Image (cartoon, rainbow, N blue to C red):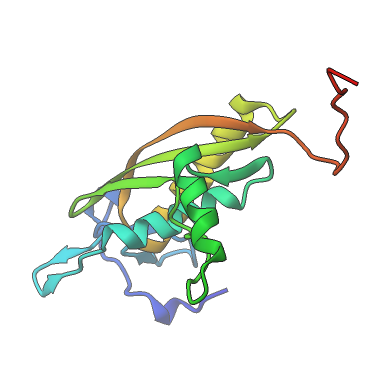
Length: 168
């Protein structure tokens, strides 16, 4: 719980008179606020690179159970080759994520591989909700859309080869 002295006391009579930001609750009589999308102000401008938003969205998407991987087949193949090369940092968390970032808004496209048996509809809603929350909370950007393409379904491999030989 934060003390009221951390926030400026508002003298506004309605929420519309408050500075841009999300209300955070607090003590009666004090209207605390926290500016979350003040990237362009009279004192300067904060720019957020596309790669930053790509990484945040990639990590947020992978946090959801049922997401096996991100990226199309070609991107995953290149990533697996890169993983085997000495001196590389491994699979990029931004693989399978493309973004368009403006001064105040971002649009995100995700390419997913899902685990077999998972409801793709429920999974897409959960991924979309988590990505929007993470990007908006960390950057202050307004996420206008999160488009999801399911490129593949991962079938669990138990390590045995159950294929029958065609010719004996």
